[in-house]
Length: 515
Image (cartoon, rainbow, N blue to C red; front, side, top):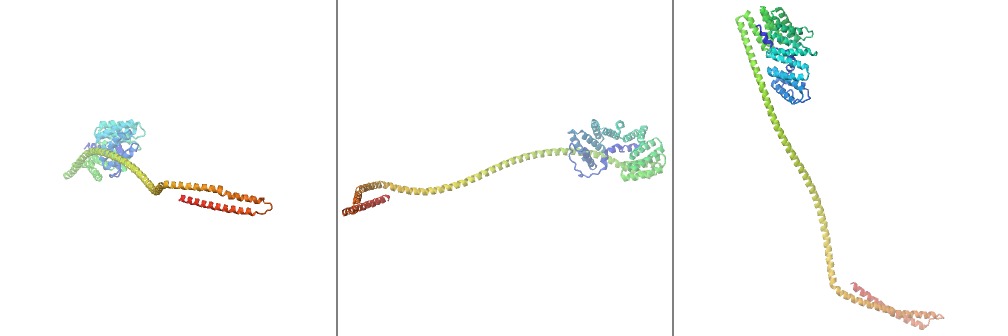
């Protein structure tokens, strides 16, 4: 019974590590409540990691898959700061799953990145977390090395409080049964006036265990009772159960079986309330130890059966944890295969999209060429239609002109016919006209003769007689002259009549010629 506390304290979650992982434990998450998108350089890595933290509560394998994908993405970029915080969170996920080797690997790489960035705060946290991980693997020398190094770094940084690291070192040396060193580190925190209630609860619990192992019973009871006060202040039920179990062990050692039983009964009720199998196993183991001292055989068998059932449950839980670890690794592999398959599908889809894009471009070019050709043909058709209309109009004009020409041709033909007729009678008509002209010339000659001889003689006679009459002195007209004047006038009238007949004949000849 002396070293039972070692196995229990290994299950205690170190305070600093709780601080780093509290986001994983305080939020509830329902699948598909958060639409996780691909992280892009420049985004807030803290917000993205917080979303993955929320996812971890309902689906650890999904969260691990996303964090691994994020890690791969960041390794291909120059964002070393984001990669460091991603590795830190990835290590925390593996730590919670009990995959400590993977957690250590991620912590060490994160530590190297934070050191390169001179981020002292994160370097201290990584050193402490590495030490706590080695503590889980019971490699106490390595654990002490890294936690001590974290403590040395804290001394160089006034902005950080070393109390959590000191408590972790105190717990480590207690597990190694180096109680002087354990008390040294625990007392350094205990003497701080601003220590938190939960921190003080752990300090008093550890000091109660140490004093019990050193057979300082009164001091042990004092520290354990004091720890219960701090657990009540911080409402930490698990710590309360731990203190009650350790008090029962103290009272068993001192022979105060009734008090031991009372604390165990209280611890059992509280453990059943929060369903902590590991604490129930310790309670029943302690009750078996107690019943061996004061109980009956039946009661001993009763609690031994309960102990076996709890141990069997824990064994099954451990088996389930191993199965869960393998399941997570299998799920990760499946996710990677799924990612690879999706990548192939995306590549095929990209090729298909590219092919379809090329086809669309080709078809678009064909459509454009077709449209241009259609527009060109349509314009040509319109031009041809306009040309056809113009030609039709010109044809109509030509036909109209042809009709006019036909009518003119008929007229010309008629004229030609008449001309032919005229031509056929032209010679005879020329002979006839010549004949008539000769006749007219004769008549003109005769007219000229009359004008010059026949007409002029009577006129001369008249004029002569008039002169004779003017020469008469007494103004009387001589009858003989008058008689000659009458005779001349008659001759003149006769000549004029003949001349008139000649002119009428000439007009008749001209009328016949015109016909």
